Image (cartoon, rainbow, N blue to C red):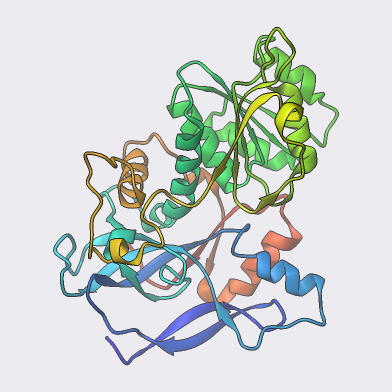
Amino acid sequence: MAGGTRKLGAIGKRGDGCVISGEIPETSRGMLLVRVEASLISAGTELSTVKYLRANPTEQLSEPKPFGYQNAGVVLEVGEGVTEFKPGDRVACMGNKYALHTNYALVPKNLCAVLPDNVSFEEGSFAHLAMTSLHALRRGEPELGEYLLVVGMGLVGQLAARFGQLAGAYVMGWDTIPARCDMAKTWGIDATVAVSDNTDPFEAADKFTRGLGFDMSVLAIGGDGTEALNTIKKVMKVSTDGHAMGRICLVGMVATTCNWGAALGNLDLRCCARTGPGYHDGEWETGEREYPRTFMRWHTRSNMEFVLRLMSEGKLDVKSLITHRLAIEDINEAINAHLEHPDSTLGTVLLYGHNE
């Protein structure tokens, strides 16, 4: 396959979506060459450059920039040292600069996992964001029966809310876009508040938690989250001496300004990065070194295998989060939908012309 050409979804110089051609990379040690069937757009991180360029028309990229970090397809070739996969395997893939929006991707073996037979390529393309959400929940250490608030019901928020339920928490989701709350209701979230309507979020939170306040929160929004953080603080549980308590997990590209120390009471703010240990450790990604599973049960690859298992068992529904299915050639239409119609666009899957 090396030496042939592939299609690459890219961000154009002025923030448009475009398709460019590139060379199919040569399969190397610890890597898999995958014929991609589906990839998923992450409207937050992936489109941040697009948003900047469109907001600053005098700025431009020097050349189109390929992007994407989650896809699924069929293994065509395996590199030296790869024994866990073989040509013909159906796999989910993840990783910036690897699992691009492209019809042929070269991905490190530890950033791939075999798809269960009943999990589609479209579902498999959700793996990276699902693992991001899962890692945020692990950082928050939810306990059975606790109350969890998820602020921001984009893809990460939707998935974090479902993981919270699977961990035994009662989950409420907040968003400024009512349609996202409605989508959460389709898969069975416990409660939602569309904070842009006339519903009082404080009254709803008090009723939902039976006057106890939330034990844990996940803040899953982009941009300035200062107002959101201040609002979350008001609905967390409070000790008898008046101090706010609980854990707040910040995931994604959120920025906040706050006073620390006594101003936060006894709240724990926990930053949640990426998909678990291993991601961006090049030697681990290609299998040149391993982490001992006895001491590190959950790393990036075991998290990936776990989210795919939950999909297979019907416990993690990602199909209900898909709002658009478009060919890679329509990538600009996909980007425009996210930026211009966020009220009706959430999960956008790009397809590459092959049937399962």
